[in-house]
Amino acid sequence: MSSSDAQLVPDAAGRTMELIRAANGRYMATDYVRATVENLAALPLREDDIMLCSYPKSGCHWLWECIRYLVFGGSDIHKTADKESSMIELNTREYIEALKSPRVLNNHAFFDEQPSDLKTKGVKVVFVYRNIKDVAVSYYYHHTRDKTYKYSGTFSQYLQRFESGLVDSGSVYEYLHSWENGIMANPSLKVHVLSYEEMTEDPVRELRRLNDFLGTNRDGDFLQMVAMETSLDAMILKKNKITTFIDENGLPIMYRKGKVGDWMNHFNSDEREKMDKNIAKELGKSKLFKFKDTSNS
Ligand code: A3P
Image (cartoon, rainbow, N blue to C red; front, side, top):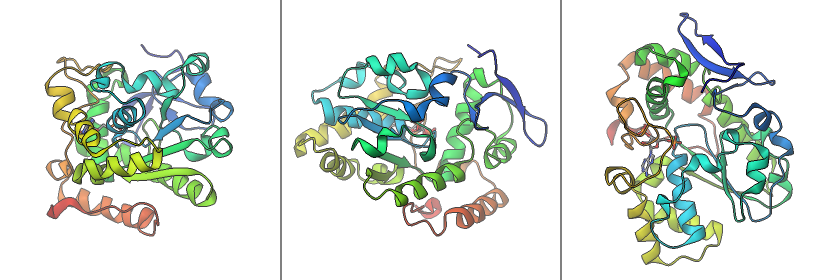
């Protein structure tokens, strides 16, 4: 359902996408709860909360499932809820406050918009990021398959929009800058940073690191089981994952290919060169984010 203050936001070529503009000027999706987003800084957190943060399409659904397995134990728990049920922007403050502890919350907000309790209550933060060219491809399918955005265009047309930050959560570069600066300026923040590509390369290794960070004390057999149960294949092809967002063909929007390097099937050489230059300019000196070029993998 479209919010009453949604607007059709044009790109430079006049192609529009329906979004909401928050008071700070950043765009959000039309199903976000404005009051929650605009008052996020004051949202009370608890010491045992876990906050999963990412730019959209970076692997948030995957990591959320993994963290829940580690925290709650057991098997088949991916069948019991979907990530959206604890995504802050999609819910009211009352709803978030009524969730039982321990909460595995998640959001796509910039660092400077996070609840102030994040820094003072010792909340554990998991931050996942992804190769930006793959994020662009994944977000393209998100924006064209979810009809609430009322957006259509070719991938090349979309790319200009994405690079200009005219999408929900704004510019991926500004988002990653905000997190890098925030993490560097707050050394006492309990944060674990990982990439989608590292998760794909060796899920058990990354689950072990997460297990150590969260202090969840799961053994090797359990981590192996989680890696299998949270694979895209297990969650989707067996059709046993609850998911809110379904496209017009009945397919889950949040679970698509799950591959590293799908950008190679979408970018032409000019587009690739341009984005690589932008990534090098914006994030080439990052101490936190390592973008492996997947063209040879
Ligand atoms: P693709 O569109 O490239 O397939 P987010 O959860 O942050 O919205 O990210 C969605 C992306 O993560 C989609 O990428 C989706 O297919 C992928 N994804 C979701 N669950 C996954 C899983 N269990 N394993 C690997 N990738 C997954």
